[in-house]
Image (cartoon, rainbow, N blue to C red):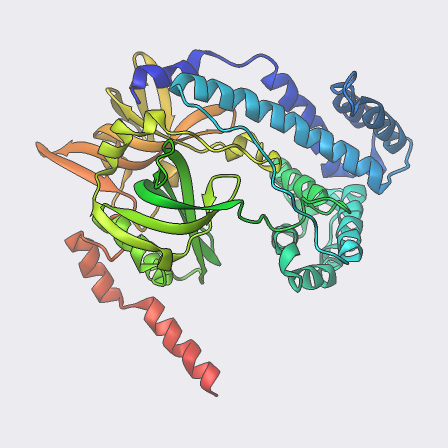
Length: 470
């Protein structure tokens, strides 16, 4: 995709986006201090949020919910309505931004067609426990959360984890509780991640609604076979887990149009495992890792796929194919590949992550920041997202002339997250991908440092084996 097309993203703010985000910010501020202590300004913020839905099917219920909460009556139904309104505002912002991106790229997108599903039978009491805890959080406010309130969710989380169909809700709830526990005492914090916690609270409340399909783990809509041409890999690293998300173009075996898909695999970890050692945690997926490191296509057979375009990866259903240059794939197929639909609960601007090829730009570095000049318009490059387990560095990105990356929208601006670059270093052409070290580092300096440090993953596995044998 030529840089001049991507520059259309930078034409200026979209009408209504800032206003919608301001309404959300007002609601989030009310959650900071608690709905039991609403002053006039925060009560007005709830009314403004509800007023955005006047004339819509949600309008009457949203207005009633804001009025009742301001009067001191906070029920599950009122909270659910306002949480739904908050999610709907973010969904509208997401759709406007993604529409501009698709227009700039000339990208077609499949319509959303939900598959029939249902929440697990007999789980209403567990979901009620989830809503009860979220209700207490909203009344108390983030500033008032203490250890006792956080610990009150432990029994509910344990019960949810025991039901396979509800583990998505359980993990989300567990993550929110862990962040609150780690941040205590919250009352003394100078700055709170108000939007993030409100995002987690909103999603958890919507996932825990009774009788709806949202709480259940998504089921594959179908299976697909064909040739998978990899574009790049996004590494998500946490202190206790690592996930790689591979972006690719699928050429279906039945001759249908090329499709954009993702494949993700993950593993638990400890915070001492960092850098190239992360790949060894994913060794149970040798076919996928080999394709990343060797730049090969994959022939897949009957891989399950979700409505969101995510493959439920089975390494034994894939075989290594011919060498396939990701930049060649991007130049030939990326522009015409059909993008997947976005599930309703995933319609949030921070979740926009679209693969693109950018060429013909001028890269510039200023301090620790890198930008690509797209015909006189600077596009921020998010070099902070570069993983430590690959060869990409900010310096290499700043020297690049072509980049495969993910376009994101966060913090009120568009940015590009590099997955692979082509650059000229010391008058020699260099190509580097995040997944180049999937089978081990190839840089002599890194290999030497790894050898000196030893195999931390093997050591930890050996120690864990000893404990299990006792």
